[in-house]
Amino acid sequence: MLIKPKILSTKTINPKIDKNRFDYFEHDFIQTKSLDFEFDYDYDFNIFSSQNAVESILKSKHLEKIKSKPCLCVGQKTKQLLQKHQFEVLEATNYAEHLTEIINQKYKTNSFAFFCGNLSLPTIPDYFTKKDIIFAKVLVYETIKTPKNFNQAFEALLFFSPSAVESFLEQNEITNELCFCIGHTTANALKNIDNKQIILAKMQSIEGVLEALNDYYS
Image (cartoon, rainbow, N blue to C red; front, side, top):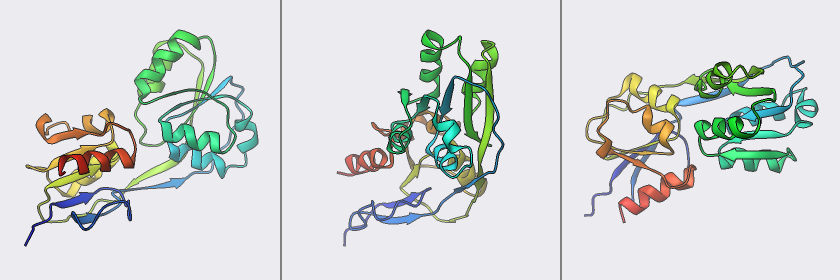
């Protein structure tokens, strides 16, 4: 009998995985919760670094005011979600570091509202502070770690965010498992893992991670 590779996804992605090929497990190692917030800033542009931030804004009483300003964002999925809801998107990059480079070239005399979660990486705020750029950091959602001990070995682990990596490692260890990551930022959270175990998706999306998984086991 053919033994199927045992896979654990740190995010619920059913039914996107082929269970005929893999012995598949999944658990949401993080959850997000939209936060109520006040917003009375005068600014030039919005910045979104995740889809979760956009989802929170869509529920907000401040939606129309925020929507009236152009956006810069991180992630193609974030861009697509913004455009779906008629936000004007001027710039979109795959990584926050790349977005700060564009801001440095084209927008460093402007002011920004940065919508983010409580565990968002400090890349963009640190850049603004270093360059004395006027900005407001607005917490619009909370990321809650929901770790679970699986107490079994897997051949491969699927990671979609640094927070999920941290949550997984609270109750599990990584020994010889392959780690399929949505991008460099997520991979960087695997600080003590052999680089040979880390496989990056070509596209920063769930589909990209699954494509990398399928290509490896093809």
